[in-house]
Length: 259
Length: 299
Image (cartoon, rainbow over all chains, first blue to last red):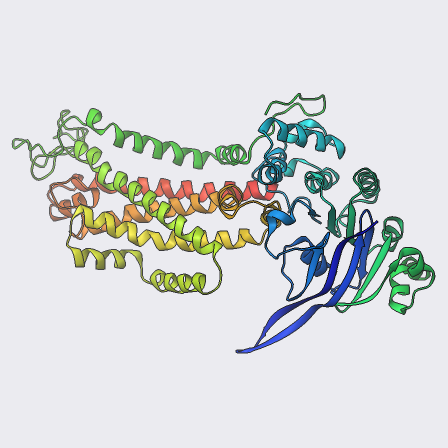
């Protein structure tokens, strides 16, 4: 298996206005580089404010980095080039309700990526959307539903459907599962694992939950204040973590039990 | 799109617009205002059929005639006649064209121009956007009637000038509210999702942002309409707007003011119509706004 996604020296600042003319730079990501192979699942863990969301946003293309590059299959991705990026990298949003337009029904919103990225006839687009809805465990009649009529689990499924619609190479998710109930969360995790097996897609996600990370991830990336602390396979990091922070993050449930 | 409906969901998904309408329809006051305005608009459109006489025809034998229910009134002139013997009912009906029709046209033109510029300003960022915002803030500090007065004072009083003045005065409010709405919408997650779907900018503006800011535009539209009606009437009252033979409500009020002690009736109908029209438009706008907010809270 070859390297699919190469991330090199990715750096991002947030500029904060201090007083009149003075600006303070807050470093959200500091020279992060790693590679993801095809079909690999990478978990990004770290404390709140360690740059997990920023990294996900940069990979998905919502934000542009100040330095560094993201290359997919050896070709560099240009910032703001959504047309070519969105066919290969798709994002699952955290809040299903907020990321779906309340004024249009599910079907119209799922047709959108097909309309702009394929030259299929309309009938084929409809068919593909219905097939995808069924693939993520929804019914064909959900096509006509508006987002506020669906439950949170169904919304998460719609978001996943939107992500897999274009058969991407990479799917990124920013705490996509943290807002769900435990039982629904388990269903969605199983769905993601099934889809990953079927499609051979690389999955990059950030999470606060050590159980989920250990269950799902092949590799773990530990961020601390925007710097990459460790990047290794899950087994190595669980058994022989080099940093105390990794140890703390991955064995949080021990802490919880002791409290 | 036709889908087979299963056993679980037996209702048809109501669209957000339909839900707003239902919410709006549940309130009796808003429904009353809605039908009142509908009747007024209908009367305006059917004025040539409904009006018994021409608005400018002078019956020299019946000057200062009180309404029909008054002992001295005549059934021929239901609301009486004015100082030149013109039928007040006909004048008010035809006057609706000046006092409601022209404000409507001015409002829609202003809404179109203002929404276009506002959407452009909302989608742009940096110097372009902030220049426009600050310029508009300066314009918005001047009261609309004063601004209209200045424009009329420069170009001279006539119907065209008043129309242009009112339209120009209304545009900044539309730009301001639409720009703000677009700006807030741009940060929403579904707009970001649409951007990540590879949609073009114009598609995002038309299909994603615009349906979500319709509420803002509709509410602004009703407020602008009542402003336009009042401004045109005020300009007419001051003698700066539509000129005298034309049966504009504000002009009629100003004229009847001179004969208030001789014939107080001639003030009644134009003033009442102005009051009822503006009141129903304001109630309509308020309740529409409330219904839209309610629907947004539910969804």
